Amino acid sequence: LFCRPCSFFFAAQRLDQLPPPALPEIAFCGRSNVGKSSLINALTGQKSLARVSNTPGRTKQLNFFDLGGRLTLVDMPGYGYAQASKSVKEDWQGLMFDFLRGRPTLRRIILLLDARVETKASDRAAMKLLTDAAVTFQIVLTKSDDVKPDRLRSRQEEAASLTRQYTAAHPLIVTTSSETGDGLPLLKAEIAALAEA
Ligand code: GDP
Image 1 (cartoon, rainbow, N blue to C red):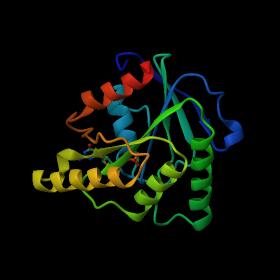
Image 2: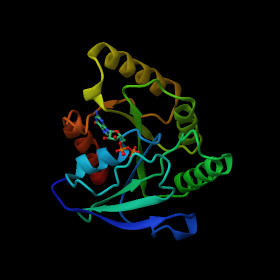
Image 3: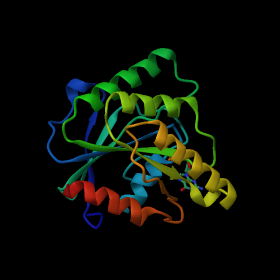
Image 4: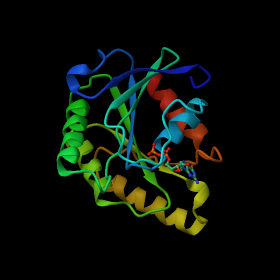
């Protein structure tokens, strides 16, 4: 699946702008700066597909990418940006929740956690939102190359305990690095299996 070309085809700022549901969809979400754009680029092998930027909280839209005519990848806006105003945060939650609830083609959310830092309240809020929306999410740790092994293990344990707390969580945690390629084959296999299902 990931040998096929991937291309951006749609951006939606509001729910009435969504493309009609067609192919199975996998959506990526996480705190601003978690490494989401880098991961999408690394998975697809396309360096500048999703924007990599140091301006967190800039993209407030859902970006849709076609992967080889078989699967749609959805890049969700980053959350937890400290400087975002309350109304921006509420807009984000509303858009996310409505999208999650009403999307019959959505197979799974990939929820990214930065392996270097503690899980934040906004991450837990997102996991609760996903559980309330009854959408399965899978925790993927990012930036594994930038963490010492002991610390990485404790972050993996923390993630495992989160999967037991939230009923919508998939039990398998994937640890990745967009820099070294760590975990990417496993994540690709998981995603490819969802395209077949
Ligand atoms: P986004 O805001 O979630 O899309 O995050 P970006 O992909 O723009 O990445 C945010 C920052 O983290 C950038 O400075 C990236 O270079 C860095 N980054 C992303 N992935 C990795 C990784 O796997 N390892 C390391 N060490 N840094 C990463």
